[in-house]
Length: 219
Image (cartoon, rainbow, N blue to C red; front, side, top):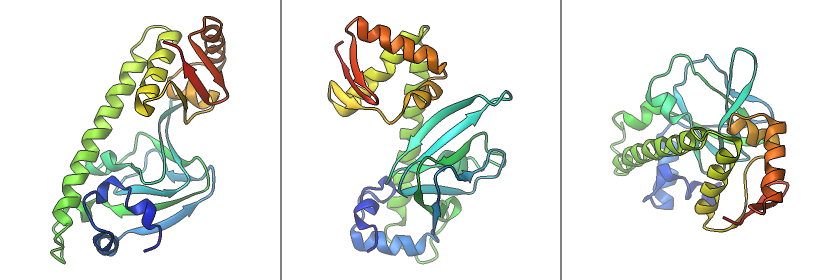
């Protein structure tokens, strides 16, 4: 099975054998698409009927305000899903855009096929539906955690909250974050220069050490 290593990691297929995953890929009416870095995958304001699964590369979910200021909602990597909440809600006008953060390959699957009756009466269809509910719940937890970062009053508190969560996610004091400085600022809704200044102050105060996207926390 092509891309077997990635497909087995996809949470939508958790609990399925490799043979069942191969059958599911045929049953779900999926479409494989390739995008060059910077390409629009979902345009803001467009309807969303399909979920996306990243096979290769990464994508960013972005929101722009009326002044053109960009905010990164999330970055999505191989085996991860995007647009599932929008497709589940039957969104006619997407409030966000999805861009290829690098050259990437995406599987697109109609959400209605996942939640509808299976014409082939596949034994694994119920497992896929159950997995989708778990994925939607986990996405809600992710957004709740992000709101916790954004609710902090100062730039330092926002950065400490985010870095602490990344440390817990990796279970390490030293780790790599998925953003450069501009992207980190966009993710936390902050000014890029302000983020760089505050990181420098935090290093001077011996709270952190860093080199590019590699961080070590001392708190």
